[in-house]
Image (tube, helix red, strand yellow):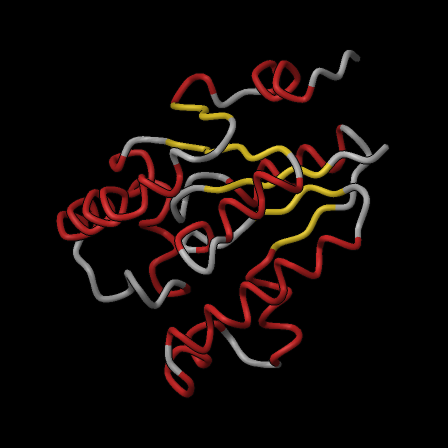
Length: 170
């Protein structure tokens, strides 16, 4: 039987990092939901938002997520907003192991400062505005994130914690 791992959390929380790490460590295929949507649409997320709006993007996102029902084993880094729409969090919980990677707004801002130009939602924000933005977004999204079966915070975000969650001995 396969293992399906869904990584959820805010932008900058390390979902892509842990997707890469877990896929190598446990020999699973690793996927990035936003990257897959961009590849299929042949547009960036920003372009989809601008041309078709967020609602159309969220429909594409939910459809792409459901595509994973066919696959027996993988680790998937979701977009930050993925759990908040179309019953996606409940669906992921039914499919496999959900892990909320949760770090402080300050830690997220520190990681994101160098990536601002690649992230349209934060590209125009000052460093102080970035922290406030992240805190507000976390407040809005946390009711969905809290539905994840596992919640790793700060120093708990480690190989040992993932090993315990996945119950895989090496």
